[in-house]
Image (cartoon, rainbow, N blue to C red; front, side, top):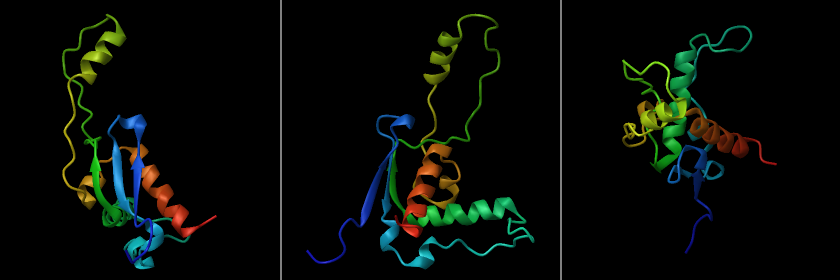
Length: 135
């Protein structure tokens, strides 16, 4: 078979769950413009004037690399039910809250990437960083 080797990378994230993983295009094998976020305005110190715009630009870069994922849930859903019992065992309370489940994320897009947990975002950023600064 012709073509590049290792065109895809499977990122496993066991701290998020047994099946938590993200399949991405290998950042070392994509054209540089795929890894370049949309230009944003920066101040004199080189920091983004609009941090939300900078975040959205990076979400678009991540979404362009992501092929698919498993075990990814909406980390913005942090609702804790009203009327939790006062006192009692915190381990029992935690087990009850954990059993309530989370909403799975839909297909990878900039909007769903924005709902990934920081552990997944950091791993994606690390892979891109490694591609840009090979050792």
